[in-house]
Length: 162
Image 1: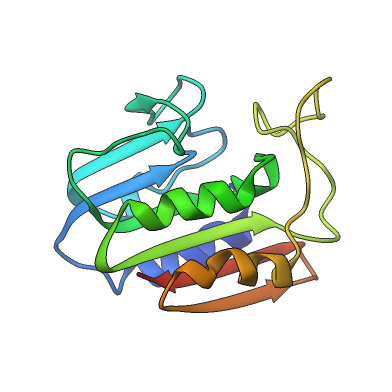
Image 2: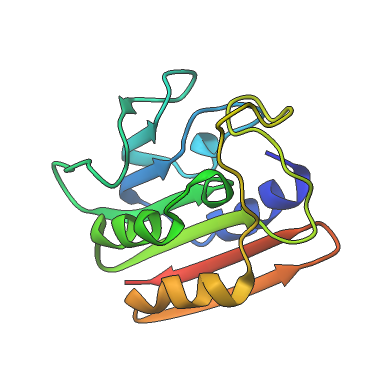
């Protein structure tokens, strides 16, 4: 995870104390993770691929949790998902009433990068920067959301409440 995204999540992590359940969508630690920022009774990292910090290998759109989450994290995932709207909808379904989704995604003008290792895109691998207005539409399933777009680093961030 690049420095700007990590900083954004770090700033928000301090507001959450005593978390019961946290779900980290795309939680495989490729170049830095979030687990250390959000201590919880139950922290579950979900990813399409096995690896560090992954507890469940599964497509989030198909996963059925044992309990709903206080916080869902989705860091640097949507640009790698050919169904970003479906991923956001799945994140919403994971949250308790009043729960919070914190997400970051690559936005224009960020250069394409692989979701496997952060390097070059591989043949057949999906990549698409997330436009802030498109993300706002996807987040309409939430009761409220705050979106920040940073064109200087090619990031879009959102905090959405269920």
